[in-house]
Every structure is written in C-alpha cells, then in structure tokens.
Length: 100
Image 1 (tube, rainbow, N blue to C red):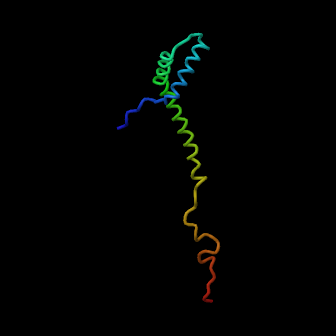
Image 2: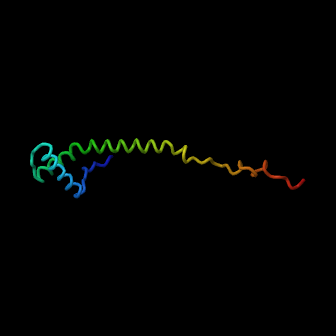
C-alpha cells in the first residue's frame, strides 16, 4: 500500500519572500494593495492547488534526465570481464616452454 502523500512544505524564509513578491505583483501589475494575510492566502492556494502540477512536472523532468544519463552507463562504464588470459604474454600462447 502506498504511503499517503504529504502536502508540499515551503520553508518559512521562502514563504516570507513569496508573500512579499505576491504583494508587489498585486501592487505593480494590478494596482491593488493587499496585506500579508491576503497574500499568504493567495500563496497557500497556489501551493495547494497548482503546486502538485509543478511538482509532478519537476519529477517527470528529473526522471527523463536520469533515464538519459543512466542509458549511457553501459557504454561509459562497462568493463570487459575475465580478460586476464587475453592480455599479451599470458596463457599458453604467450609463454615459452622451458622443457625443450
């Protein structure tokens, strides 16, 4: 059974900056002054309603990034196995017989 997903949590410092940005946006773009409470409610709405879509896209982008990088692992990191006897001077083909 899958664990219930936690809501997206935003650090307090980031929340404070976001609220200031929302207030500025409303003032400069919409010519409407709003306080911290209203800006906080707008922020909470966007995080709760739109945040999951942004989060899911970020996870999808990360998955594509890692899938592309891991696809090359075999080519980049592959090491041939059991090659000791294939090196020059090893095995019966590279040794001289000292009993002759």
